[in-house]
Length: 219
Length: 260
Image 1 (cartoon, chains in turn brown, green):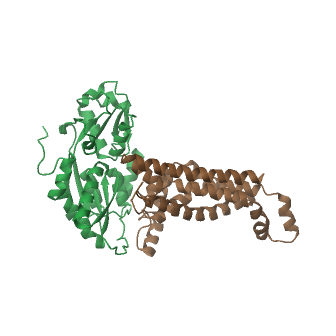
Image 2 (tube, rainbow over the protein chains, first blue to last red):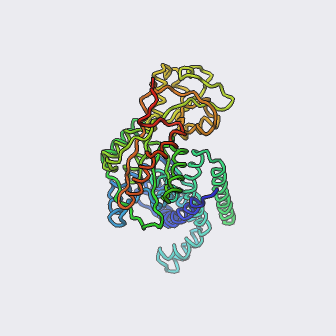
Image 3 (cartoon, chains in turn purple, green):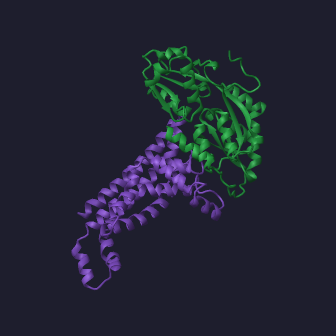
């Protein structure tokens, strides 16, 4: 493999997406675990949707909602001066949406697993609910939250379908590692396809081992 | 597929392509060319030669012509669109995304019947009716011009119904060749330009079995990348460019073989 740009881009995109999906995902997880409100089931279904939907459907909705004819796309173009789609930023958005449910589901289980007596003790000590969350719930659930964020990172790194639809396959600009593998297969470039695939498998195995470790020690 | 066509139609009808991309005046001029998959080998060589002669850096994004059209209509920052079919270029121009003055025919594509080494090579399209060809790869006729041409060839040879259940679709013509090369199809109707390099003879599909694969390009660049994009387009049509295209088995405008 003679071009390392796709790997470098993938790592940057995955980090960006992990920050977004991690923050939003833990927020959603907390609300879903603790909240008792109408529409909770619907909210849960909505944030889980990207796991179940074909990536092309996700990509299509992103393209129509962020594209040059959409209000968001127009507003972005007015601010930044170039379209949002077919840029690395669009790749970050696609990867964030794909990664979100993995963070939410893992983090939610971790938050629900926190011993209620610890939280009750903090409430008795007079702490308001946000301090209970910040001082007790989230720190106790930290391992599970980390596992969720790690899964989100792995998912973001590997996203193909949604990314190729909103960011395209532009070498040196939006061609991430999974897209470079696809392109190499199309070009009959077996060595790049093999190297790229091995790298992605390697990262995924490392992340999944870490996730297993984090979950095991929690019990 | 109907849904997809409808979606494309809506996208095309409402399209307004991207504003000029902000370009941080790079040291060496650089452009991005959206090119049909059948051009991969020929255009890469062409790009290298142009780079050697002028220093212009050309990056290619290959895909099916229909997919690339869709991306351009949605604001993809491509500077030249080289399609495998002139209709897609016309779509881009009528949406206001390409400069009509730069529309140029640059080649006519040809289909071959590709079989893997050791396979039983059909000599005509009609031979594909033989059920020993269990899987026949063609590009997706919905958005890949070579796929549409392959479908027409099967229909005009009178075997479309006979092979219908055995067709498998590639995403684009390079993908179609990949399906056949990997042994997942017994034969593929693919672009001659992608098979020149393997040094074997593959039966050419007669030109009268399908509408001409009239390949056209258009400059879609705006701002300061318009000049290098035009230089690339001019190079494709220059003597040097035509020599490369001819070497990869393309028929050239102005010197077409008699189709009959």
